[in-house]
Amino acid sequence: MKKYAKLLPFFVPGIALYLALFIYPTVTGFYYSLTDWDGLSPSYQFVGADNYANVAKDIIFRKSIVNNIKFMVAVVIVQTVVSLLLALQLSKQTKVNVALRSLYFVPTILSSVSVGFIWTFVYDPSLGLLNGLFETVGLTSWTQNWLGDSGIAIFSIAAVQAWAHIGQMIILFVAGLQAIPEELVESAKLDGATKLQLFLRVIWPLLAPAAAIVVSYTTIQSFKAFDLVFTMTGGGPAYSTEILSTYIYNSAFMNYTFGKASTASVYFLVLISFITFLQFRALRTDRVSY
Image: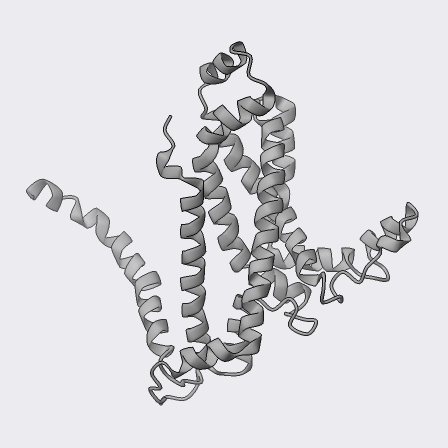
């Protein structure tokens, strides 16, 4: 015990930060979710589970969950598939591949607000680059009001989210691919495995831990895309791009219902934890061995 006691001072700063920045805010948020606090008044009433019932009945809250799930599914599929395909092409350590990986990583270092403003201009129905490109190549029927059409606005923002973070996922997949023993790949090739068989039987099972990180991280990113959504649409039109983070913001800072916002945050935490758990179970990373 004396040996471990000497190490205790090294853990104290980390534990203190964890308690102050995670445990305390989480417990406090849960407490306020049981009150009607408006965020300004020194006093408030304890309302118990009423907030949870009222938020669950809120049509806008339900719509924000549906929008967030649509957004998440679109981002996870596009970002994971595209980054995996690019990583397979860029996994070799050559000068060209290193340069391309760096190029794909550039959007990641931009702030989400900057990305939002850039793509708002790209999507502009009158002066935007995207519609202008379609018109130039004769695809006028493809032009859209990308952020003004409630049917496609959420997917337009999802495309931007995927574009901005594909570089990160490429790096994670490349790291996973480079960790696969080369002798296993060569052995499969000598046994006559096709490229598809090599990927399905050798590469993908060994890449599952990296894929689990990519999918879970992408999921968390898609639920935290407040700044991108707020910059591009503010949740409109007609709440078609309202997601949980914008709903929480509007409840707390626009409507001054901090109790309601705290309740939505608890729902947010439970939902994202449940989805991430299902993803890890589906990828079966606990059964992967090297």
